Image (cartoon, rainbow over all chains, first blue to last red; front, top):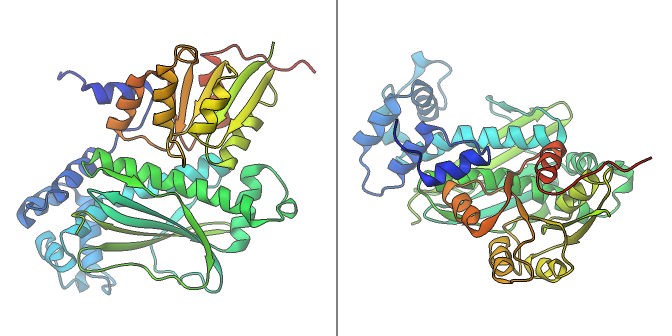
Length: 241
Length: 126
């Protein structure tokens, strides 16, 4: 058995969950600007779930596999771009971070919605955290003002009627976002993409657009529980260009 | 004598949760919103410091480093309470000298368990 690396030793001592091996390996590979499509294809092909998700992402309009225009992992990667592999790899850690945070802090079991959902209309509370370093990008959590109020009251153990000013609500939403994105950032770091987070910026807005460009892969995930809908928008550029 | 705990976190929410967690115990929880305030309050010699990492003005790593350099304060036990769980960062911080490390999100019971391993914690007598 190989000796435990010192960093792992500390993580084990404090009971810190390890980043999944497939995520670590894919992250390390994608973080290399010289990584070839062949190398990434080979790695993704070893993981059926990742392969299936990539094919679904490359064929967004298909209702079943029979309708796929891109049927191999290589074709799908050429269609979506190599950077999308990083989002795919980070998808599960992000889902887990959101689920764990809301379950632990609120006792709410949020479930990701796999079907497309309409974004929040009208004013919403938006918390955005930017990460910079080997990977650059941003994560944004959005929810309705009513949901934000309910969550804040529950976390603070007070009645919603007692939360008169928005500062206390914003602090709770900012901290929950910080926990989710902090966990996600730690996974990026463990995959070799060292980066730092900005403090959470909270605004109330009716206007929000998912940032995206050629190298900046973007994804929106909707979460649902009774009386609670949450959107997490994520964009990552693994090559910092 | 009540156990004196200093909570250093820029989030008022977390400071409030820490305070609420130890309310049933014979403990006094004081608060600081960043490392600079934390160092000033550490001079009052708390029995334990619960410390966040990412904070404005002075972050938790800088505060911990300064604390360990101060002969008067270096023996105050520190438990990190942070969303930072990257392997390299955890190892770096652990080597600076912390008694334990709790990753957010956390349950009240986890914090109580870790704190009780370091300092005496008695339930308040009704």
